[in-house]
Amino acid sequence: MDEWEIKAGESIPNKIARGIDECDYLLVLLSPKSVGSGWVEREWSAKYWAEALGGVGVIPVLLEDCEIPTLLRVKKYVDLRHDYSAGLEQILDAFVS
View 1 (tube, helix red, strand yellow):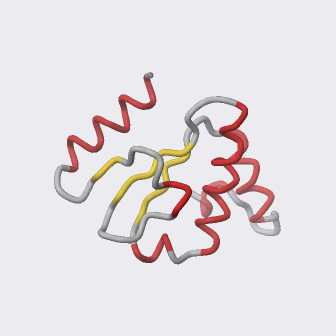
View 2 (cartoon, helix red, strand yellow):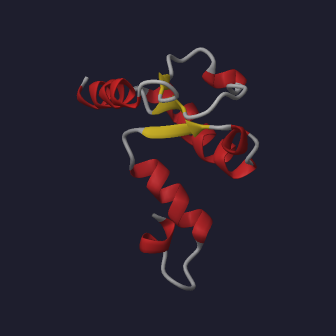
C-alpha cells in the first residue's frame, strides 16, 4: 500500500506512523522474514503498546513456521498455514467483535 499512499518526497516513516495511529487493527503477518525484520517489529510494537489504552489492536497471523516474537506469544494467533478459509473467518470475527 505504501506505493499507492506515499507520494514522491513525502516522509515514509511519518506516513507509516499516521497509518498505524489511525487503524483499528494491525495484522502482523508472521514468517521467518517478517519476524527478522526490524521495520516490521517497529510497526507492530507501536500498535501493541497503544493497546494499553484499550481495544485489541494487534492480531498475529501465522503464515509460515517461525519463532513467534515474545510479546506476541500471549496473544491468540490466526493460523493460515493449513486452513486459509478458517483463518480468514477468525480475522473477520475479530473485526466484528
